[in-house]
Amino acid sequence: MMDVVLEAWVSGLIELTKLKWMLGLGQSWKPGEKLRLLFAGYNGTRNTGSDVRVEEMLRQIRHILGPDQVEF
Image 1 (cartoon, rainbow, N blue to C red):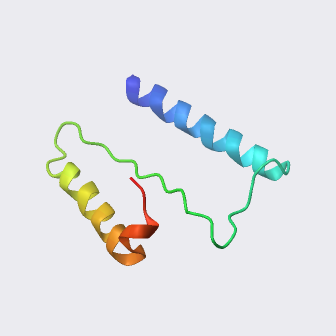
Image 2: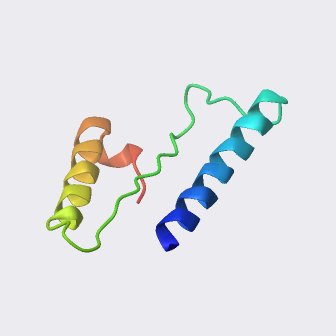
Image 3: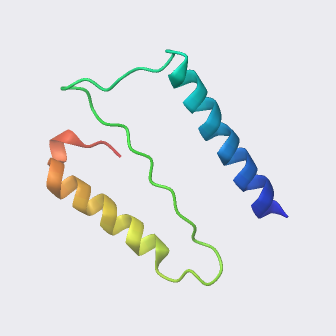
């Protein structure tokens, strides 16, 4: 049941953000601005190693962009 509630909540947030963007309330990224990235994952039952995957993704982002260009 909680999965359904969580899915509905996240879907609602996504649709609300999309609507705001369509109405002109969003802000476009501009060169020189830091990117804001959201990494989301599930580390519950039967998902062994998920924490390691997230750490590795972040390590690769830091390696590609450079340590002075990222902030965690």
